[in-house]
Amino acid sequence: MAADTKNVSEKKRMAISEKLNRLGLKATPQRLAILELLDGNTSHPSAEEIYQRLKPVYPSLSLATVYGTVETLAKAGELQELNIDPVRKRFDPNPQPHGHFLCQDCGKVYDIELDFPKLDVPQELGEFLAESYSVNLYGICPGCRKKGRK
Amino acid sequence: MAADTKNVSEKKRMAISEKLNRLGLKATPQRLAILELLDGNTSHPSAEEIYQRLKPVYPSLSLATVYGTVETLAKAGELQELNIDPVRKRFDPNPQPHGHFLCQDCGKVYDIELDFPKLDVPQELGEFLAESYSVNLYGICPGCRKKGRK
DNA sequence: GTATCTGCAAATGTTTTGCACTCCA
DNA sequence: TGGAGTGCAAAACATTTGCAGATAC
Image 1 (cartoon, rainbow over the protein chains, first blue to last red):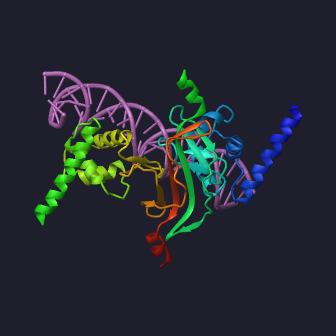
Image 2: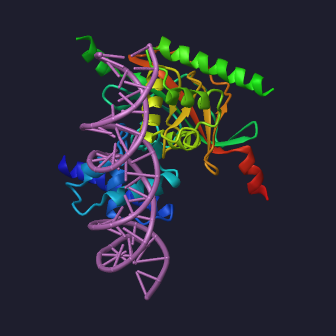
Image 3: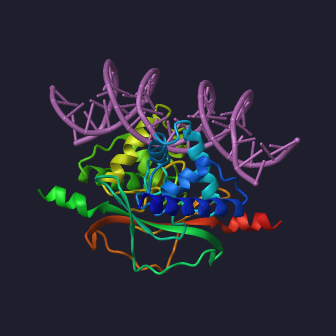
């Protein structure tokens, strides 16, 4: 069991490592850790949250490195920066445009399915050239609605 | 001519003043100035830009007052705060949800028409209750495309 | 070996806050 | 006149930057 788990994360780490090299980026332990944390993560953490989660495991990790890494990865198209939260950037390992919902009660960001048409990007919109887009919703999430009903 | 212009802005100011009172807000010179500046303004200024524009006319105006005023007005539903620019909030006098385009070259924010369906808000989306939403596009604006082509 | 990357600390820029004073209703 | 609103200065955050030392390739 433990061996299996280890194999799985080994494999995952190797895949991430190769992906980084393919992008011309060095596969440093910090980058591996950040990408591994984000992989399949739907909590849309901020830079600070990523830092706090990894600090216990990589005590030498610096917040500036987290900022640098997510910026590099966003530019490489491996993840997206979300401007949904007015206070801080959030990061999403899924670089495809999709809807997000910010709960104004608990501050959590959720992926959300919309029947909005997908927009292919880059796309010409009149004389504007759109290279990416985002759909942000604001309101109350299911959990907070239940709490509110008390 | 000058008299007409004065009448027009007099009327406008009175309308704004009444609107504020209707909302239970005091019609202070600062609020009138901010609302008058924003009225019909499609440049989506930041708090700092509003402050810089009004400072020459109202030298005592404080940046904190600008922040307070736009927050109050946004809560009252009279304008909307845009989270499109990762660095600073922008303000739009049109409180209706509509598309925005941020030019990654010049930093200008444009209103944009989309054939995306309008979403009535508040709206139930599964168990989520959406109270507002925004569609943000990122790319290059017509002016910057022309410049880039040089 | 070397260009890239990291960590640290300081700087920057935006937004918020506390509080005394002012002024609109 | 009283409570809401303003201005000021300081504080609080999020993010960026410069640079010296470390390290992946």
